[in-house]
Image (cartoon, rainbow, N blue to C red; front, side, top):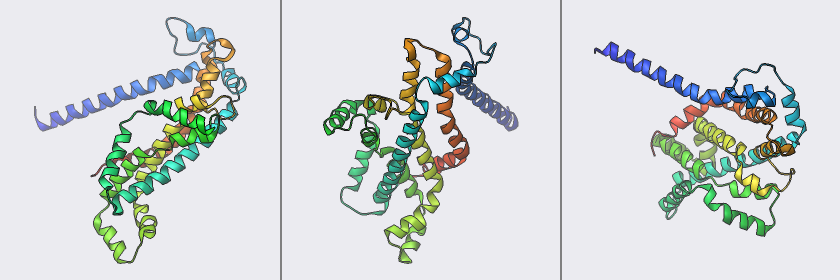
Length: 278
């Protein structure tokens, strides 16, 4: 096999693998969208029917009226925005300190951060729940936000990116008399925009989809987020009516999907640049 044939074979295999991944990822999303327009009997029919025989947009009306969907949306926006801003600021500052500041046991601190990445959130649920309950923060935004404000991943990502910044740029800024604040705001952050976008977008998606902790903290609709609201909708009237549930799922996906489509290039570029070295 010559080089041209080998190249064509590799290219064909690459496209085939990419097509397979697209199908695997897209099929559930297509099913959710189509199911959101089906009536209950058509969803449960066997064998499954993909295309609705008749469209039922009233599923969207039921999804937004049978439960306080607007309040769930507002709560999700509040929790997601606060957590994203907090994690972003703390992650950037922590990473800057680990790279550009000198202090004892810096490597030990970084090892602890890596260790925190390896601990599943579910392991700390009981201790966090007990602490929040003792502080009287159950069924409050503070009780939802504080235990989720850890920044181990963001610190790791931004630290790796900061390490990839050429030392000549940092030295030139310091020779010009730049202190830490000026170095961060005028030099480090402007050349770190793609990585910061990736960090912010990953955090945004994770917090928007967070379910377990808000579910444990929310006693009523006042602080319940959209994922928790979907559970309430699913159990509405004591039955499982998947049409409105799928409609609400589509509505919950749209904001994050739009943000991702707008910023996907910056996210990919940022993840690549953050993995240059470290």
